[in-house]
Length: 506
Image 1 (tube, rainbow, N blue to C red):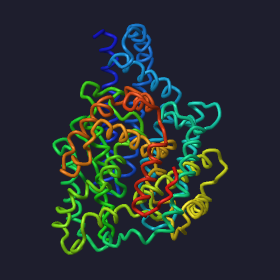
Image 2 (image 1 turned 135 degrees about the horizontal axis):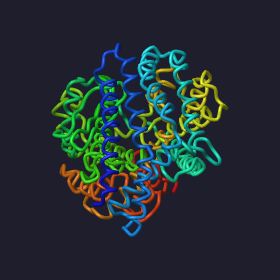
Image 3 (image 1 turned 120 degrees about the vertical axis):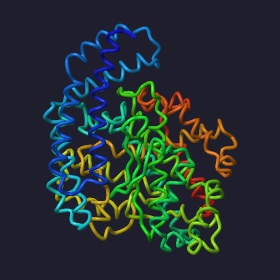
Image 4 (image 1 turned 120 degrees about the horizontal axis):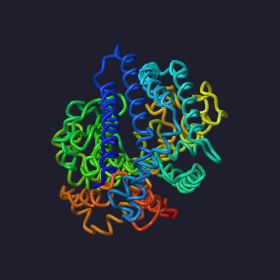
């Protein structure tokens, strides 16, 4: 390894350490930090992000990249050296456009806004949160303008998270999904009595739910020697390196799905991080390829596996022994149907597979409108409620179940949210290839055997980290770029069967 590469790696290791220290402070703020720590924590995060940014965007990194671009020009595209230089250059050029002051202020504003959002959500009063959101919207604008764009402000922010994807392309994807989803939702509405989910609301002991969920995700492959689970207002996963990958969940006595499927979802993220190669640790390559690719792992485990008939044939006996009173007289088929009930609902993280992408679409549209100034922050609840009524046909009773339900707008990160829908599409596309490569997958799941599935994901997705853009990764794994077709076919087949819809639209 050349001296230049060693020098670059040493700097990147320092930058990674600073970023992970910030992530640890953010995890603590979401889990155990007392309310009185907010002001100091905002300062700490601001300092760490500023120092990390300054170190990464310094002239020394630029000089080393120039030397290494010549040195690695003959290396294979997917080699460690070529990938490290290529991805670092992409990040470097983007981050150089942002001043340390802007990076610092975005970190400070995100930390300060979080408890304000929690209070507003608790009190169901958007006006409490509005000033913080106005500041965050302005910071998103400043970041987009600093990076630069040709057509849409959102392009600049989207490219930070989903390299190569434009706002226009994303709008085309959403239009294709709406064309398929809206008729399917209408078909399901005409057969709504076909699925009964009352069993999910019978009062499940919260502590028992958390224990059961953690035991289950370890059986899927989440390694507790390198992880742990805690409780937070909004479930999330975070990583401080290959040996420390944590998840959180939340739990409701009155709705079973919240804890279990939230835990499966976050463990999908965590297993991705636990599977990234140690050889690329402490470099920009050690992370998910994008939020969309990361979300594909959580949605794949949560839905394509966790809401499948085979899954519940295996796990239902242990669930019934844990909650015998609630599940007396219920069999695995009835429970499988219950956890897959499709109906328009208010909360994105609890939404079924059919309606979920409509929740993401409305946020994507509202982010664009706030960013462009066509929607004022003070008018956001009204716009939110109107869009929910239009897309889902339901009324929003309060801000807690409406515009304040998600944590994401408390931090400066416009452009991340579309990853939730991209994750659905990528997960279905990957699963199509997985089923071709592992023909007896359902039999393995029914037997409680998940090693082959996790091994496939490790080989084809996890170990590469950020070596490849999302489309490069998909083409390597499936032979095709991103497509909506596999997800559309999946939901039409699954929910057509569940609801007895004969004329499924293809």
